[in-house]
Length: 606
Image 1 (cartoon, rainbow, N blue to C red):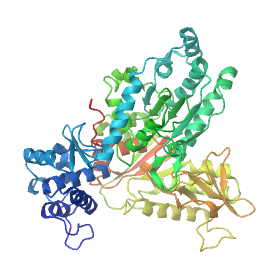
Image 2: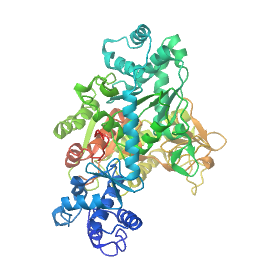
Image 3: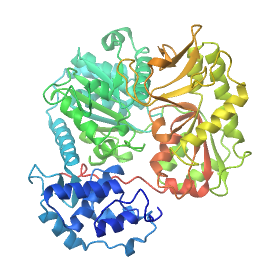
């Protein structure tokens, strides 16, 4: 990050000298400084060492961490123009002493409850995040410590034998047994390891040995919820008649919808400690995307005797908000990660066997190399000429030439042409299937490597492939057949939620947006839609929870702070058939070798 010049809007006005120095260096933002100043003013704290610590804690939350480890504070200066050693960092012993005597800070677990900042075991929290972390820790530990639920062992064995008959189903079978016995099950695994299959059959086991049960399926986004519902239905349809009848027809919703929105609030819900959810079992898919505050609200809303099954891949990108709860829950259980963590210690079961992989596909080996941090193996796979993975290798970080983008243009234009032609003919199902044929993913929202630039470029390619929009189309209107859309706001009236995708189609009476499952799309007239944007390209975060036949990922320059192992792994695992990476070898190496670091105390015992 470049040091800020006088007059730059990013400079905090009237900042005290120490905070002004760190703000000018780009280590903390103006908002971080102003939060620290405001809290200091309310508590009567003038010590700049303490205010700097609070500003850094605020910066940590903006970066996805739950707290600040003082020993890691200098990492925030890694991208600043001013060298770390040239900044006036407080002496560590003096810094800790100032924090511990500050009227702004509650010290320890038993410290005063009315202070906005908390200091625990070398970690500095904004108090609300300390409280949320405490809720998650206590609730998780209480569920894991609950006595095993009594069931008919013979009936359980029979159900497991019937629903998990294959020799390779041992871990899936163990996950089902863990869910029957306990109040918290964490089911993890990479792509193709059968997590959704396990969930569907696990539900059938529960309904057999402990039913009838009220079961809720949920996910962080509407798209992920729709995929979960569709995948579970596909598996249930393959079961025997009695198991199908026991499971019934399950519907999935977003977590926010499950908890119940309250008007005018984004952090409070209808269901909570005083009004529990009625469900006996709650299954949450794509849990890596769930933030710490949302997980705390979910755990508070569950009945103490309800079962919770958290499903996801801890190696994917975490929530865009604070926390990496799934990764923390897996890591805090001894022996729960890696090959040695195949068992159900601490309620965690990690599936290891890949059940779904095209013969000869290199997508999953590439994902494994990325997850292992092996940059050279990842580059070797990308360069090897496999039909399923491809590297469009750029020599430098300049904008790629047209010839380098030819394969990407071919895929984007072909999928776009299919989508537009189906939309013009009013075939919503075909248009939605075309929407999943190819997706361009990027890391940034803005700039030459951002969504806006690439979305405009793909739209141009598609327009050239299909010709101008047919009449009647008002050139002043943003609505036309074949416009792919992404919902960016929640709307209870239409049942659409942030992250839902769809396409505008002609239906003989005008234009209508078709969203969701191609088999039974939801149709909404454009004037009734919540806020949407055109989705010829999307960020990797937006793409999380989705699957596409072919994926093209455009990497930013190797200097981008968004280049991480989790971003590359998440993008690669969105593809079912083919993944293309466009970028420099340096960018690939930087991504593979840079795991996300999110500070948290959830892995600690207290």
